Length: 459
Picture 1 (cartoon, rainbow, N blue to C red):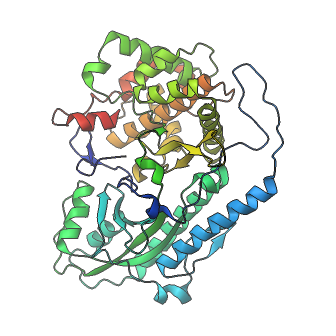
Picture 2: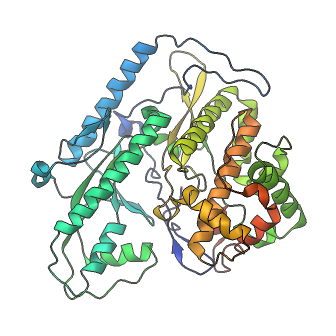
Picture 3: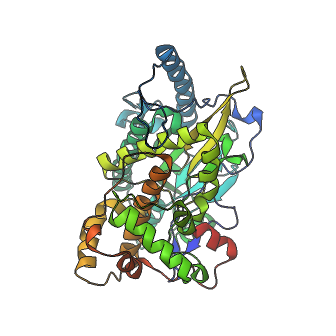
């Protein structure tokens, strides 16, 4: 998702904004991936891929019970491995390990010792470490809870950890619920198996300064720095395919936040107007132009072109788009379609024959915490747009920008894939013009100090 030395993006105000780190970036050998669940060909229950204009027909699910039992057995092996690494048993919810821990087992939780572990990468949400005893998984240490605790402890050394633990347990429950939702809507085979728990991590001045830097914040002055702090640690299955150069992804990006030299051309502005009208202002419109769509969402070109020539990849993409639309309509939540390799598609060969199918994984599908309320925030923000009130707050503009780009990306893919469904989740969008969206959402592009690589990641 990001290269190790360029994990942070800046907004136009030169503030670091949250990124999710791709915790599977380091190459993995075949010996490293023993025990990882083999991906199966994704097929929506009772449907098959159909060309645009053709009806979808039901197809029998051959040996479905046998395959389901095999999948469950494989997944359970992964879950048992993850639970063993965390040093606890954890509770279960509808067949998914939630990672919650009862009061009686808290004392048995093993601290997550970051010392002696390799830091694979750091972003605005997590620091990610290897697990020396098992290279098929990684440990993700949430850094925001650590920053919050240090801020509250400023000038108050020795603060009790009871309040912090209760807060983290509530956050843990919310994260587990979201994870369960992803598994419900997309299937366990498409979501990397994860177990989470509240655990202590050793802290040092160097570590605390690093996590504050990752969030673009100044570290507060504390009389006595804590040596251990509580946070949420996730142990997660690696996705070895992420290191394969033949994979493709869904990276729509933010069409209003690209290089100004690109955005300020007449061709770009015309494409933006036509595509936004067809996919956001009037999502039931039949006037969709793929070439214009790829002008403002260029990172999708390789995926779309490859799917055009590969029916199996097209079927996998269709499956994802249909599930994503249902997920967003029923939960009001969006996925992170803005960065590379968040939603990863890969060729999954079967050694028994020469045919191949395409699978996918939601490697890092949830938006950063400051973007997770994008869709539910649109109603209030759109009222301001209609009333021609300025949206001056950077986060508010970011939320609306994310919602508009999410709907435009999914609807554009649906049009190209022949999916008849569409998203219409931007209230009152039909009452304003694309140029009004542009005036509100355009941010001038990355600051001049950004590197070329940072600009490309913002695409």
